[in-house]
Length: 125
Image 1 (cartoon, rainbow, N blue to C red):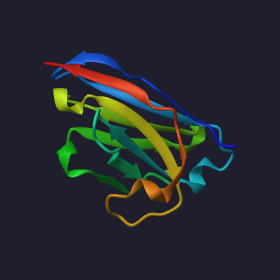
Image 2 (image 1 turned 180 degrees about the vertical axis):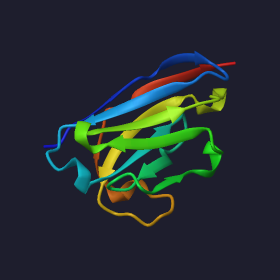
Image 3 (image 1 turned 90 degrees about the vertical axis):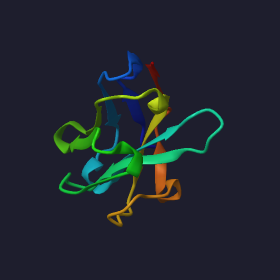
Image 4 (image 1 turned 120 degrees about the vertical axis):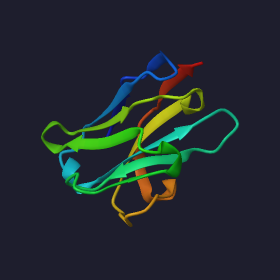
């Protein structure tokens, strides 16, 4: 069973930055499409960003608006989400996910078979 472990969350102020990391226990990490999702209270989990197998292609949700950067290091079995210019509305539990489907556009969570436990990001105004 593959495990995904997120880290790097916390409490920051509006305008600050955070970098989330997701480490995978998989021995075939580069075979997976990796993505970040988030859930805010009272809302469904939503797509944030995804990165292709070797990191040469990325896709973002519209609300990211150039503030977030997704990347991966296959040698370290790790995916990252650099979040800059954070806003209070970015407050959510962030989840990393692994799947095997790539469309070049935002992806539904049904395409991802493995999920991390989630990590809290809180942005104060």
